[in-house]
Image (cartoon, rainbow, N blue to C red; front, side, top):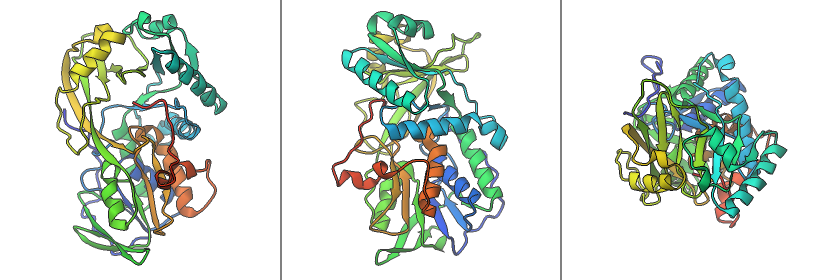
Length: 396
């Protein structure tokens, strides 16, 4: 199966402007969300640059999880605010994003995982979520594919679920265009030009855009953009692969988006089959996006432990894409102190889609220098030089 491509009809003959008030680099969920929220707030002369088609980087996945189920309060806030936005997305944008709130089920197979999830559910509910700890029997009742005997407990958050990233990217992009944003697809950034510590322009394969502000949303390619501007963005690309089982004549039982904390095995419904995968520990960093079955032995070993019925799944097709990992697997959101005018929202390490709407709002406020719904300081890229890494339990 090919990557999901946004079928956005960009205005015919779109030309690259000579000047912009702000240039956004990256046309996935982050770039389009930020473009829309900036334009909605009245920012003019916005140019969004995408080296390929919109939504073909980290946002190019058939289905993306949406959840507020985290252990870090900042991640909970971003996830819950975005979930609220997704719940109202159809009414606001007139787009069905395929939202299915089947819940998230995190499987605990050690006492430490149970304790971690117990602490996390307290934090989540303190911020208005509805997650709770459940017994192995209750977990099995929610998901008949899992082995009750393998569990010590689980956490369940019924409001969470999954949706279609490509539809979200398309809706944000079309709304941004209506508000005057210029979107340039198949346009590659070659350099971010500076005089001293100030940004002067962005050079692309089409020419020069004079600008004093750049927002990097380039996902797995963000390190290179940061290097052009003289800003350290420690983002490493890592291939992640998922498989889709053969479609059956009748749908399987509806199950939550289920994740095993010990092995990172995960799965949920995909039409009349299942979508499944695992964060393959043997995968070397790099930009490879070719699909293979190298991850299946690790998946099968994990399935034998917690979901025996899924061993040797009958896969009809698969997909490979890139995680944009940071050293602590948490996002980079902020503005550079060393290079005024350089902003970034990247390194989401697999959490970008589920945090995209809220990050669009947050970056809008950072750019405008106004108070926002949360303090973004903890997500600053400076945290690594200050040895202040974030700790997040609910990572896959």
